[in-house]
Length: 346
Image (cartoon, rainbow, N blue to C red):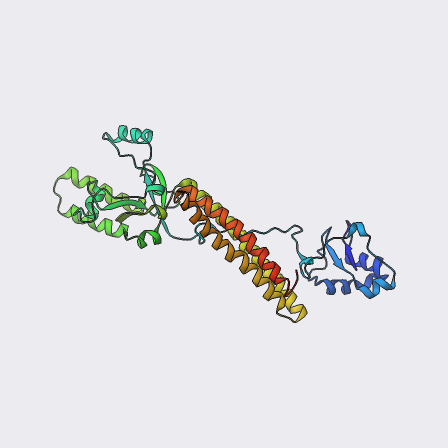
């Protein structure tokens, strides 16, 4: 028989009420796999040794009957369960990025132009159009000359200062995925190379005013953690503030989902040890693989579906991928659950 825990219950009290002997509470604990018999939850369902219950003529009232829970989950400290199969558009939250600040509207450009005394270019949204240097790849402008402000350069300035880039640079931050940029052909030139280029120019400069400006740049490069990218960066490698914030939030939800999967696998492992059978672990592995595998496939299909209607980059791509992944994950889990129940029912 089964018994639903009420306020004020303890295993000893339940054993006395249903089995006639408070000292028999360890039998209930063993039958339910309770490793912490002092921690039980109101509303939790316990299995009571059936032969003893029948001998006492005890039966659980129909109105209290709850669906039988997976053996082993009765010890859960989480009374309500839910499924989260969410994959952010980048699964690994530690992927390396550099930050480029970009002037993306006329008002920002006017404010900067008034401060520095010359016109400032407005860039179209990099997460839609990508980033492109002012000069061609064959431009002779060196790393040092770029940092001095020379135009027609093959380089783009960025920063490794986390999380929003060097404060000295003006504009809206955009995060560039380093691996994707390299895959697109961009090369990275670090602060040490920039400093070497500036010092080389300084050795050949005689004008005191020019030397003072170079010395100031040499002081600022290390604190800015400046890095230069040579070549163009595709939109797929770039995230603006909204998309980056959404990605970080989804990565947090994703980590919760991973933790829940680990909990479910641990519960199945406990049942396998208790029953001396690998069937519970095999069944739960199938369920989790179905959920996460379908979430991954669904995210890819969501991106393809968005691209088919013209949503290829920016926040829209994140949304179509999220919807596809969430729907695919839930469908995959419950589809695999139907198969897994034939191995070991939960």
